[in-house]
Each structure stands twice: as C-alpha cells, then as structure tokens.
Length: 110
Image (cartoon, rainbow, N blue to C red; front, side, top):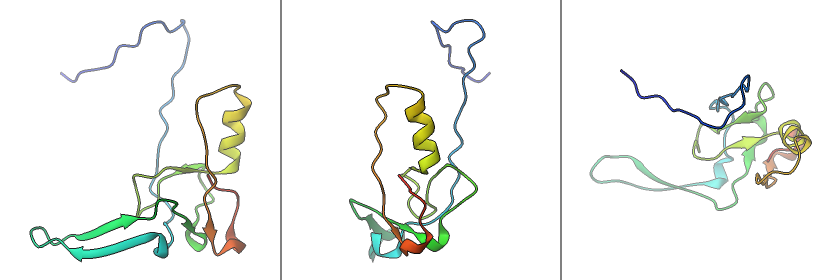
C-alpha cells in the first residue's frame, strides 16, 4: 500500500494540478564551472554560476516551465507563465529574469 497525502480544508469540487517539470534546454556552458574528477566516484565536480544564464540555441519553445538538462535543480519559466501567475492576483511567488546567450534567440525567460 502506498502512502497518500490527505489535504484538508479544500472546498468540494476544487481541482489540484501537478506541474510537470521537463528537462529541456541548457544552461550556457560558461555558467557551468567544471572542476576536478572525484577520486572515489569519478564524477566531475560541477558548480553553477550564482546568476546562471541559458543557451539561446537550446531554449525550448514548446513548454512554459522547464529545468535545464545540465542544471536540473534550477527551474525556468517563460514570460507567458509569469503573466498567468500575476493574473491570479497577489502571490508569494517571485521571479528573476535570466540572461540568454546568444540574445538573438531570447523570449523573456525567468
């Protein structure tokens, strides 16, 4: 038997949605700093710039929300997603604009 979450206080008929966070796009190669290999496991040490930017040529245009394949702990959204959240009214969600290189491929990404 799998445990399941029980949510209380929801009105009848309230629908909850789970966002899918697909792996698409890439952080720009200069935003990903590779260090030495771990002597134990052989993995490369990787650090990501505190203000990462995206590779414009790999920017996905088929989703509004994504995680880059080479930095899956980061979540990026496009301008359409930001507008949809802002249209819902006051929220505690904040967005920061991310750079895209080359700039010729940008849409606004946050």
